[in-house]
Length: 274
Image (cartoon, rainbow, N blue to C red; front, side, top):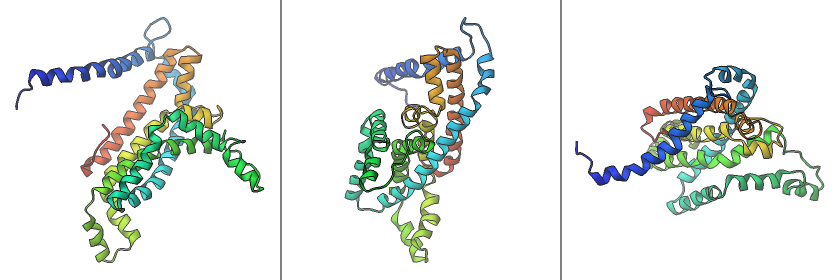
């Protein structure tokens, strides 16, 4: 094996410094505060008392699961449709899909709030045509809708990338053997794009389970998710020990979900998340 030159080693130094300062050090701080009390003494109380937050954990997992399923049901057909277009049309669709991602999540959420609020664009349109207003903001559906709206591109892009690399002769062979368009999708496209599906599920589920701004705005503050609880412990209750304990459990949940997704994606030879 060829030894790395001094310049190659020096070029890697900023990466290691960045990783230590912004990944390793924060993780060590979280672990330290999770297992200490306000006086710095070692304790398991912060972890043991997390049972009182069980409903919040379950609601966060449920919301993230529903949002991920909805993104998959919408994103896969869209990705398949995009992959079957001409290259020039694919570029246009990818650009249109990525454009919202160039805007801050806060602005996108505020825009959705302005559309769905009681006096927003949707209810104004309903009133204009003589229909009653619909209360959306402040409901569970609004929070899940916000997750789907903000994280849908993370589902579509990896699936589209996988599908666009498939040899079209697979589809032609399936059609020659008598498969209909629907059968071709289920018998050919789905099995061959499993790595993209696994990546998309992970990329949607992880930010959905840890989000807090979406639930605050679209949920009207009526639903506490894991991210909301962590923010409140750090900023309002000034209880960084409990907040760190909740953060540690959430990181473990995320790592488990990523490990499971990667395990199922190993056989495909596709791109993995970690």
